[in-house]
Length: 258
Image 1 (cartoon, rainbow, N blue to C red):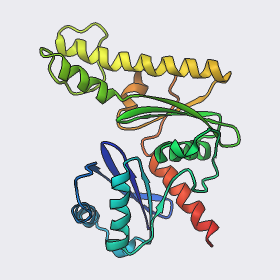
Image 2: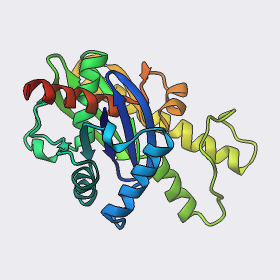
Image 3: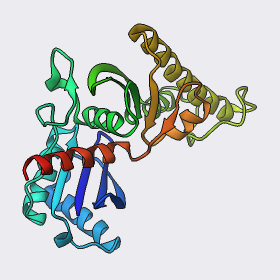
Image 4: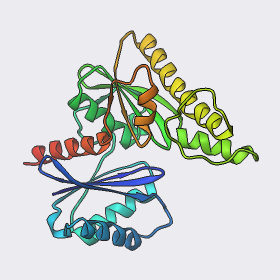
């Protein structure tokens, strides 16, 4: 079995694959203050609760945007699973051509998403990952990564509003019932969700115009469905896109290594 570990700024997502099937997935908070042993206990308990044993895992792949946690999860693979993990970077052979002046500055999550999009939905495609930050990644024919856009995430934007406006309460993000809110909470929900959706659609329009193409738009991330519901442009929502990309890269490496 393959354990994919996607380490983001807010959450760590674990995906356990058996052949082509995602047998289980779990989510932990990202916290660089936690030790190797603390995280290991959480991972092992989640696997046990899902009915899986560490000895069933034969491969580990890691995509990480938090350098301290990359070291933590690499050590977990060594110490608890006795496996040398594949840690994805711009140097990993992924089949993707990174057409940038500084490819080393591209996050592993963006590389993985681009690989998944090119393989699973085809090119030209534009991947929008709605996480702590919202990233837009442009993948052209021939699996060429052209670059993209990084914007503050929808939750980050909402939290800034809550923290800086004393009279505005925190609210749960969900799909609004109307644009014109009938109370403060409805007005905030409309502004956050519809306003952010317009940001997404506006950037898609600008990317299409600048690149001279109409890209297939693929959305992923925790709030992708809410934004996609109101977007004029999102074509496909793929919640497991990052994990799928990690598996594709791990399988490619295994083929190369015999």
